[in-house]
Amino acid sequence: MKHFISVDQLPVKDIYNVLRRAEYYRLKDFKLNHQLFVANLFFEPSTRTKMSFIVAQRKLGLESLDFHSESSSVLKGESLYDTAKTFEAIGANMLVIRHELDDWFDQLKGKLSIPIINAGAGKAEHPTQCMLDLLTIYQEYGTFLEVKVAIVGDIKHSRVARSNAQALQKLGAEVYLCAAPGFEDEELGMPYIPIDKAAEICDVMMLLRIQHERHVHQAETSNYLNLYGLTKEREQKMKDNAIIMHPAPINRGVEIDTELVECSRSRIFKQMANGVYIRMAIIMELLEEWGIINENNFKERKAFATVK
Image (cartoon, rainbow, N blue to C red; front, top):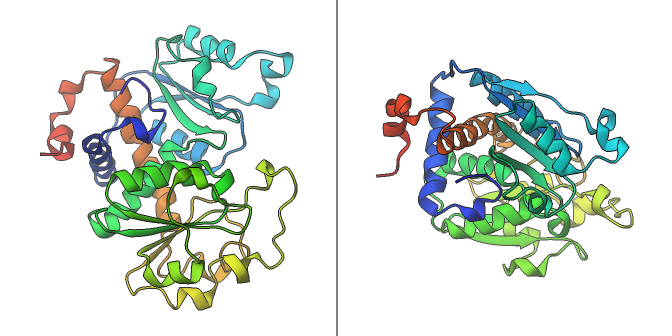
């Protein structure tokens, strides 16, 4: 794994190894004694992803190099490549990039000598969010085989939906999609079912927000909750051990009744906590793969994490 751009690039065994490594970091304190720098290049707004990357880096003892596109040379016309190359030149050992283009990595592929992590690519991919979602489900059920997952909401504009649907199917889960008219993405090739049926049959209700910033026209949300969202009435029909997930930010009262955000079924804030550990795991995987740190120093962790 030279770069972490898509969960689709990982064999099933490697996905499990990253999940188990993240669990190791959740249970044990770990810090490097090297001075290493990670540049966080976020060209789109972010709270959870950016901040959890920074927390992950600091927990590992890494130096975070911050970047704000609105006060950078991007405003003078600097390209993504030149920005990335600048951080490589001044000593960054790794880049974490979020960008509005679906294919931004194509501008950098094969042109840099440091590892890159995809922190969000347009409407196409959000692989670290996918991995923390997988970790949350794995913690709950200990398997993905035959776990029924409904991905509910703005499928058409969601990079989370794409990454999760494909990864969950690869791992053996049964994936269903629920969307309001106009919010579907038929390219995913997975069955659409009404949200009322999803509430009754699924083990995981994975909700998505309406992504107004990616719509050509403002989406109508006045009656969205009652028609297509998770209401208290639908929640009462869910299986006893079924859980609610959401990548956030949350539109309370739109895709989910506000009283359900922190109900006993909700794993929304647990997902956020897991984001730190999964990003620690991915960062360490890449640092070892590139030989930036010596993996022989981590035999205890390897014994814990490796799939037998």
